[in-house]
Image (cartoon, rainbow, N blue to C red):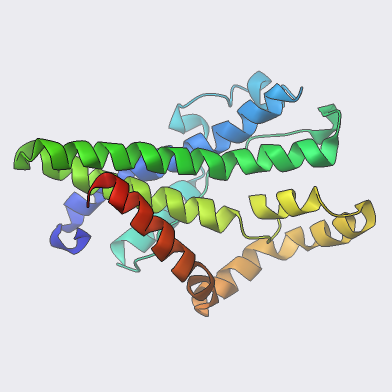
Length: 217
């Protein structure tokens, strides 16, 4: 369906969902950290939906832009991580796991919101109103589900690794998190060898179908 759009239209349709998906994901981490007693993100002014506060030029602009313009069919990105100091938590490992989980959960909630927006477009059935709502809704569903699933992978420093760390004995957790320096390299290798799409392809197909059904598509 997106293939029907021109390059400019694709950029217009995707830019808002991508920026919000990445921004809200980070704010969710900071918000949950504050709930557990860490005010670091709040004190640094990072608990805001103002995307300028969260933009990482490589992860928020360049990478998503290249993926969008090259029609890879797989779009993802990241913002500047919000600062979280686990030393302020009463139960650092367990609390950090929940703080990490807040990011993917926020993406699932946003995907639901975009699905309802697309459904509104379907119900209205007025081309000049419905088509922008439907196309933007599809983009919003897609980017949020990709970010949720991607971040749940147990590759340090992705959120899934923080969740897994919360369940590991301290010694194992330390060794496991020492892989963080190689995390980005591992992710890039998995992406360009096709392993990443192999792992995420079927789960993405299933969950995307559920959200498209919700949207009435």
